[in-house]
Length: 229
Length: 261
Image 1 (cartoon, each protein chain N blue to C red):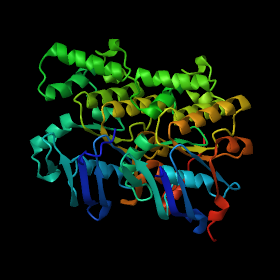
Image 2: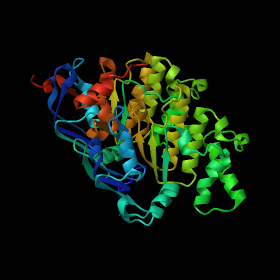
Image 3: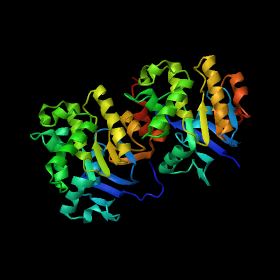
């Protein structure tokens, strides 16, 4: 039984401001992820790795194919689901660490993380958020500060905490370790191993070969899905 | 926050409004569920405010209809409601936040009376209870309690806008219409107001239709977005999908026209 099934997915863009330039992104994308395993997407920059993650999260549209996500006893096709269904599915079934943190003004780092789990976060959730930030070596004094002024690496760690705090069956990671030092990279590798133990299905984009070797159970080469121009 | 068993709260069907030969908007259809926040974006003159006025029964549509699920659970066509029923909705079950707070407040009476008036419209008569509810709401919108007896004429623009929100939410509405709620405020005040709106909408599980021309406001507050141009909806969908992967030429133009800060 797969937690996530990507079946014959296709995506292209039409840039109307560039005279209707048609850009094929990917076609014939096929892979599946079992609970407790990690699939790493590889391929050169611009080959469509992030686009595939965004289609799974539902922030990019698919032009064809199916993206099936297990949600309890049901299976939802995110490629065709209504906006409400996608929002509900995200709250229950998908966690996502994007490349860059989108910080909300005035909201403290700890609340940015806790709210990702639940907008009306309880003290218990905030405690767990603080624990996770501590593990990612965010100093105590920064937790109550909005992350807009944080360094790139600190923002990325807040972003990682956002994605790792909720326990959802599918976890999408877009370059989670790119701007981290080796100590924090090791923390992220541990966190990924713990998620796998708890049965989470992970799709990750990681450029670093060593880190990829440490986390991935299966490699999917995106260049095979290049869309014909 | 979103429950699969919910029934639609507001339904718009093929709404159109003509001002003589001048088009306000046309062909607008959508369904809004409890707890759902929808942003309507587009440039000035695209029909956003006309749509908001049609949805809130302040304007009668030239064709099409708007249905609202009343507190008794029955979906009713707004055009078939009597004037008294419509006014009752407007005073209790709905909120309407104007861009200019002076339009939504009584400028000559105190802040406390501004909040209390909606409670009195619902039948509250106990002065002490009304005052303490007003105090509680001023506190929730971060207005100091010693300002309760001041009239909004001596409030700053940001405070007036927060007071207008308190006045609207005191009756625990299920649906709030907002017309450029952060327009005309400077950015630091805007950030505070957005944070406040975001928190209250979640806590109270409000459904909202928010008209804005600011895509950042739409991204922060809404689940869904509707892009309007020349009176018609050109694109709609999940907010991050429309903003991150815009499909229509006009949406691509809007998204690409934002200056990064």
